[in-house]
Image (cartoon, rainbow, N blue to C red; front, side, top):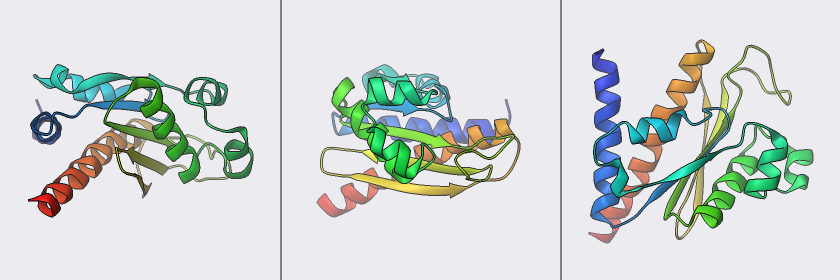
Length: 169
């Protein structure tokens, strides 16, 4: 097993432990990663303590119907946007009832989408108090962009939880 994969597994394990210690749960709303993020979380022993599930909404119509992404968001901003990532995360949080939702939307290639270049990714983390976002500009193959998005999403939420612990502690 490559050491880079092990490191990512340990990062996921850290996220699971942080959530478990807080008695919180996680779910995903995935477009670009198409279930890979939920799978990466589920790969780690103990994930069932915190992982509720996820929604793979690759098609725009599904984003709108299941996650309640407003048509106005799609028309004005496109599905590769901060507004769409936020709407996906917040819609999944309502639907699934989890403490936290990580959403992923972006362009893995090989062609531009919504006028955005390959490697443009938005991640959102919706939690009890707020939703925060991060834009990524990734390089590499389609598989590398999708994999890097998962790693970045895990690191993103882990950082949020660690900052909250510092603030509360």
